[in-house]
Image (cartoon, rainbow, N blue to C red; front, side, top):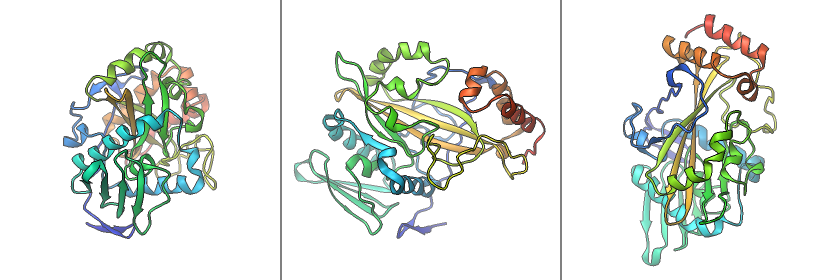
Length: 336
């Protein structure tokens, strides 16, 4: 059924993909990289950099809200991004048009300039041959900071751009993250890629090998990995400094709520740019009510949580009392 939003008629969007990455019902801290072409049961969607579905309005509204609060809390660049921006923005625009020709139209003009039309937002983005934003047409278009901001605002995904200069340390050159999972983009911009995951217990060995791993990914086909956790609300934006008017304490299980527990899964795509010496790190969040899990999935979730080390439980906001409440709920709560 088509709906009207942002002043345009949205087409019939597909159902969201479903991922349940609890490998063998155990909690692990490993890269667990798979080629993006590997099937996870979601058809052609699994092989795409971007995943656009009927939840698109939810992500769009979240990004608009983040912009209205304070854009630089969620989206920012450092000096390294200027040299990468043309290649990065061109890749994003091309992938959107190739993966979703029904939703995006890319017109390349004489001299290398172009126009990307997004039928989901009703916006028309014009850029020059270096991919610098020239103009934005659209009745409800926000005042975008640059082409990167405008492009990622057309997608559900968050995005980090990692600079991989030859013979120098890697660095996070750009971030557009409006659905962070308990971390602050402002605190890691310009830092090595490992800064995003530095607080995660058990990341020591992975961090030590990060430089060689990123360099290898830069020259290889895109890969995908998953991160998961449990939350007590399905809010997309879990910035450690909650937006105004948002209940900051979401780490308490309310057994009386219709669904007090959600499985939060991040699909993370690492897309290497060999010539530009950069890496795109795309993050798509999925929140799934535990009441919608199958009995087997619910059991696997419980078993995976039981294998989680105490340090990891604390990091994920599950101190002993909260963890016990979660276990009780998963053992005897309503199954939906």
